[in-house]
Length: 307
Length: 265
Image (cartoon, rainbow over all chains, first blue to last red; front, side, top):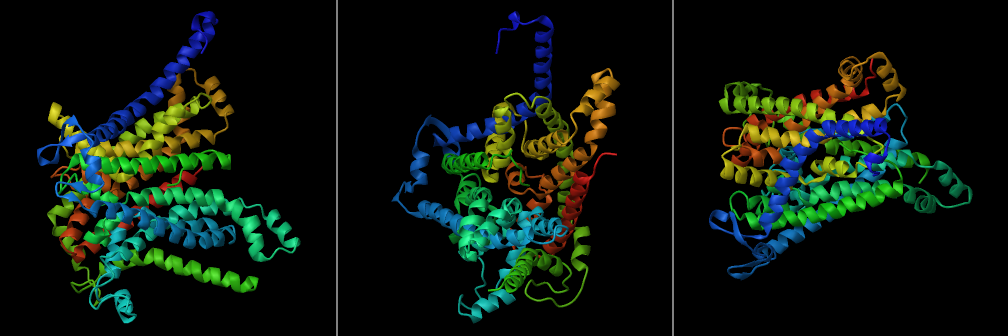
């Protein structure tokens, strides 16, 4: 920025006015977010580096104890419980994301190649369930998977579960819940990619006697890759920190990182331990965001909000 | 596989996926009309669970909390978010990277981290100053925080969609900025504001995790009440209240969509 004193007064006055305008419009909201989100998250990160006092509340001095606890080192030596939870979060996230891709890819293609006037309605049909309350949606699955329901009886008949056990609580139910919850987040970016698809490339490949499979691999798939990667970020990051679904559908043996963290602020009460788990989630989030930015640059377009 | 059978297989897969997406919601709605006190079988049509809702004080107070929370937080977010949206548009040629990061932060932060950060912060603040005891007030603050970005982005994209020469014309027509705001800005972005209000409202009513961690003992909202009821053991009343919520959210969401599509008069 040039020294204001060297500029013509009219221009510098206009600049001051513009800066004041920017401040007046943006400051209230920016201050709000700083005070009520940036500050609290910074405080939480600080808590992770404090010792645990009575009632699980944080106290001085600073320590790395909470991270040792997170890795499973407790008063009674090392136990694998927390690491299992971490591993389960990772596996659930990977499996659910993979399944979401497998379902969303043909769906997005089908919508994008349907008649133009149907497309908005089809997209709406996919998105509407995600507007409903997460607790209610998950409760719906509890109704469907409980012992004695047709789905549970079918699984019993096939010998997949023990009699009268029902399909939940189980890790399977958590995976199902995650897939259900995140499907729309994958369909939307993939649909956007399919809609922009340059069909001339596909025709050229076919004209050159490429098999449908080869044409797909070399002409279609690379073009949908940015949408696919965006979808993976949108699904995997929140899935990794999921709380409601494992809590309701997973039971004690289906716990994920989100439950481990939340429990430290409720029943079990160990704030520093919970905060150290939250830091892990934040790291995952920022990796995801960084990936998203890279993808965004490759797409070359502006940022898009997916609601 | 010929092209035709391929399309048919895709169509079949599409309908299966729709079934998957709507089955859990349909089951909740269906069992809300179940005469029997069981989630395993449907024995006949009845409105008894809806009648029970009306007599349940806890549910009625949760409903009131949900509505107050959603309306108050949406109105605050509308004011603050609309200003940011306009600021972002007017100064879009500046480097506003820090602002973008700030605005995206509430959207990208995992709910659980968002919720416990606020909780830890409010508890500490209350301990130090005696201010902000957990309750509706802290919930409103937390909700406004996650609503601001959506309002700002909706208003911003509305302005971006306008013809820039409109602003020049308005400058010539109305001398004072106040008059310009009243007679040009507000009418122009009215559909965006209405759409943003309904979206904020929906987000607030839908939220569970952040509400759960910022609530006080007296300020349970409907999702928190439902959560508690599920944890205590499933009661068919939950189906009824959940069905009403599904209906309400669907209406609000459709209204938001209608207004976001509408062109200004």
